Image (cartoon, rainbow, N blue to C red):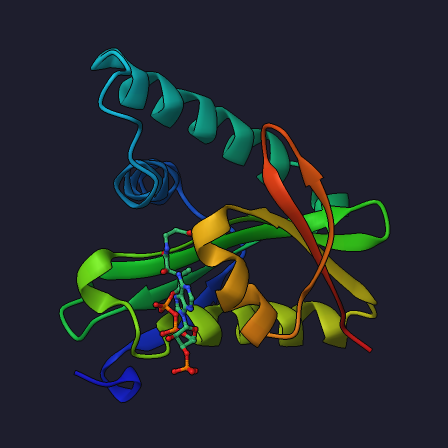
Length: 159
Ligand SMILES: CC(C)(COP(=O)(O)OP(=O)(O)OC[C@H]1O[C@@H](n2cnc3c(N)ncnc32)[C@H](O)[C@@H]1OP(=O)(O)O)[C@@H](O)C(=O)NCCC(=O)NCCS
């Protein structure tokens, strides 16, 4: 399995079923702690779909989903980003466990950077957890702070 086996595409107008699919995949990539009630993931899916509906209906936010699909069309990685004030905000980045470490995560980040750099954005900001910090540092991000709920605040200049 190599990066060439996957199609990576940008989606600007996801339909309701794709929004729901990405919200469900987000729960797979970021599973809640076992102590959380079983209903938690379902509630989070609903909240995420609401967030997608809100952000994708605001064209000022210039939102995109970047999807990595295998040859059968299965989504194995995704990123959701949009404009927040004058910078790009990386809301979510995830690759399914069996497809990690072959370059999909880096390719998703590079596609996001290229998309927004071409539109004149200078900075890309996101929050990440401990385990992903070194991944983002490899991608050229620097740590610019820490939030007790969202984790490390990371930033990269795009120009
Ligand atoms: C972080 C994540 C998106 C990386 O995706 P990926 O497809 O495995 O990343 P890549 O294969 O492009 O890896 C690129 C480089 O980063 C390294 N890397 C990947 N994940 C890493 C991690 N968690 N910690 C340290 N290094 C990591 C790889 O070894 C590779 O290094 P190399 O270029 O020297 O070979 C993926 O592990 C993931 O979905 N994690 C769970 C969700 C998450 O933490 N998302 C981040 C937002 S908080």
